[in-house]
Length: 114
Length: 113
Image (cartoon, rainbow over the protein chains, first blue to last red):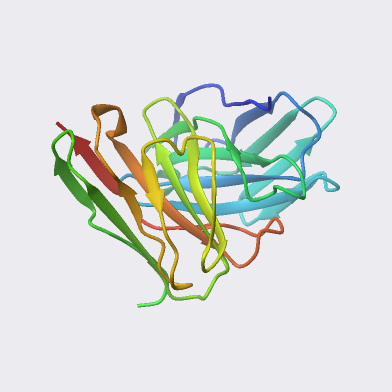
């Protein structure tokens, strides 16, 4: 059974630092992996989607990498800002046939201190 | 307004009562989903729908009922609410099931006393 883990559960860093959030999964046979952002009292917003054939995706200050063989993905945030404070979740899609059935990590709560 | 909306945003009910959470999307997306999110856990899929009149169980369907008579609406009903169903419920939609990005509503925080 696929399991997704995000460590640490919470992270606090000063503004301006570059940081890395981690996501690990137990079964390397995934269809894709997504990173989401969740703000308090709001829904989730998809940040980046990496297909299983890709190694990384970039959007602005965000870069997500995928290493299927080791069951790991990282979300790199450059030059962090207080507005980046949120909970970040990763989710894997296990197969193409059931790729809508996302398996979720519990998230990393990120606080950027001004 | 375009997007996906959930109502109510907050709900308090008592054990044994029936509760219906509403979800409406304006994109005509084929797929819609209901998740619950509990502290310390990731989201768990309750039910999903591939199209109007087509629904299927997710990971944690017990105690819940869904229907989808129209493409844009996907209500979730708790037939007899229990304390274990206290949670935050999210509705989502996607254009297709083929790895497309899912778009989420703002959530409904449900407390069962």
